[in-house]
Length: 132
Image 1 (spheres, rainbow, N blue to C red):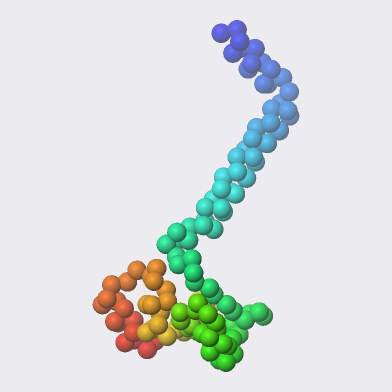
Image 2: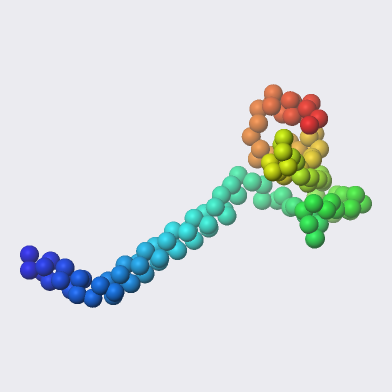
């Protein structure tokens, strides 16, 4: 009983020191939790992805495609199984404010290259048959 009374008195004796101590603990916990979340989000999904997949893109922008001649050069590299271009283009839904990114792909090659996409056979068939 006397120890708790002594602790409480000393906590309230210097309010600025108590406030700074509590704030430093809060900031430290916030930073630890934020950094742990960022690290876990960076590695999320990498367990299921193919570690042998290599993605190359234009050095200036994602919207600029690689030259078509590069596709044959990349396919000729030893160890490369398949090459497929992804063409980025912007999509607009009903209004220019509703912008979203789209990628044009070869649907026949997509299933063999990106094996971690989970779709049923019916969904794949409808994806391949839909030209949009």
